[in-house]
Image 1 (cartoon, rainbow, N blue to C red):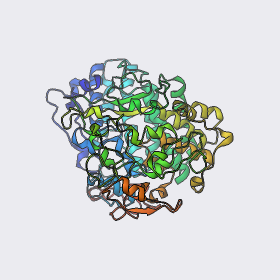
Image 2 (cartoon, rainbow, N blue to C red):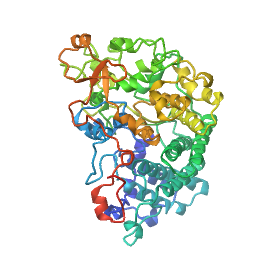
Image 3 (cartoon, rainbow, N blue to C red):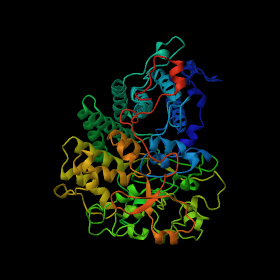
Image 4 (cartoon, rainbow, N blue to C red):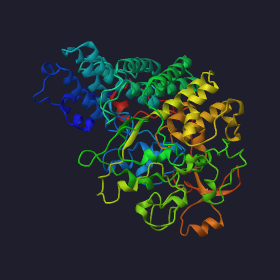
Length: 591
């Protein structure tokens, strides 16, 4: 596999480490036999140097952009699959997932040092800038140089966009620093200035990267189509952030998002994976070990015994389960929400929840009849769902076990920390969602746009089309201050991209943090449930809308009674040590 043979190469070349606003800015490692004077000569030198950038980006904690599953035991928390725990899609209760619970409930505090996925990874930027200062030395054509310059700038733009999404202003640096560099003691660069630089990097990458590196989706290197997808993602985030939070020219960013996604849709080689089976096609390719050649998967991380492995399949229990809020967002097969559809059977027992619903629900949440099909919990033969407190098997905090990525075969017969479940990092379906949302936010969307995007996703699972002339008005979303059409596009995004790391950022950019105040609930709880789930250790509450009783996941814990301060919680705090080391850096509002 190309990427891993690459990554073992001259990593020492990239070890000109850099960190924001403290001594790590200048941290260096010995170069051994390689020197800056003798290295930058051939295309292979440029390739090998950039390989080391991929290696740095494999640290999902420091550089959470090519986010997959962290190596070995740490895959219990640093997996892309668990990022939805920051929001309202999943309900963890495990102590190892405390950060997710803290952020979701608004109970996180200012850390002393950078927290998980936090204000760190600046060595990655330094390594990029070292490369950018040297690529032109190679005795190769400018077109060849531009490939590697574009690759490095892609990484830099994506990294800074991620930091801006969490912290707002960020210390943008585009050159190698030394001990006298004034940037070492500078304030953070204003958000909009950073994002202009990000757009320059992504524009360069999306024009100068090759359409293909000839790696056959091994996976190998990021290509131009990947850059277009990331550009559409970043520009959609920035455009909607500026539209709903305030900022200059949101239209420019939304148009850039629409243009990038449309170019990928029209000219790229990717398409939705489909075998014509609506009951399996959504999750079938999410549960295999080898994604090479998949027409929808644009970039993925491969795990291989003896090279890089994980144990993420064993940690589904840590995720707690899908929430009532998520499950209720799946439409009925007539294309109407459960609040409006006569097809909805209710939720008095869990089997009813799946009746006449979008097939993606049963391919995301475990139906009791499917435990044997999925060999759930190593085919232990127990009845599912199993609720927290029950003896044996996997237990769930909500009753809604997550099945979308489950692969029992990646655990059976394998030693601890030697599993190989891949991580899908970029897939074509996102481009369709980005395009539809950008066009809708611009006020330009047409039925043809919906047919090119949302309705293709629905076709894969045999769902009714979204018709601009018959957009349902779900009463649960009328208070969000958006059109019913945008509400439906957002719903589609939540359903299609569940457990792929989008929900928290989506709520932030839409300025919908208030949704994190909704109590986190699970399945219906009544006398029949008490009999069906013996020894379940749960708390319950009455849903204020339906007046029915459900599992209340966080009642009696530190994460009950969530708070969300609109002036504070859309950004994360800057660590105390960073503030102490550089007084020019100011804390984010409210922290």
